Amino acid sequence: MGQFPTNESFITRAQTWSPTPNINPLSAWFFENQSGTLGTNLNGSVVYVGTTGTVNVILAGVTGLQGVTAELTLASGGTGYTTAAGLPTTVTTTVPASSGAGLTVDITVVAGIVTAGVIGVGGTNYAVGDIITIVQAGSTAPATFTVTLITNSLPTATDAIEFVGVPAGTILPVVVDYILAPGANPASDLVIGK
Image (cartoon, rainbow, N blue to C red):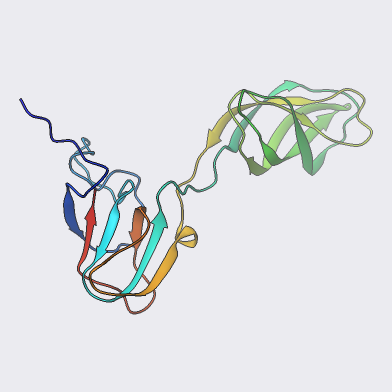
């Protein structure tokens, strides 16, 4: 029985690669992906450029927005509120490691008590279980919601960086997760390696 590990000091696995506009989080490596469907995630691969040109990449570890609040559940209606939109919030109790900020809520109020809330802006870095307080001048007891669902995003093309005029025979000085199609003068004959 033998082992064939990926060695960090030199490339032990390689494959040709064509840039794509698609960002798919499934691994593009057969040995890492057991789903039967390959994605475009190169999972920290190096890139060899065979023909001079531009290479457009998203560096390894870059993510999109994380911890965006997608669903809230009313915990306490508070008192002294009026129906309003875009109200700021504070995190009064947080799940360990949560550092949420930027969430706004539109509230519906009956007799000064919040009866419903809709997310205006989801903010970032929230965690399921965070307790959110609605901030409104004139309220006499805090209205609170519990974060019950968050979403995390993949990186987008705006997160990419371009290496322009990369000479043939060069290995990029970074490891990458995605190679996107560049705007002009694309490099070709790319080989990814691990």
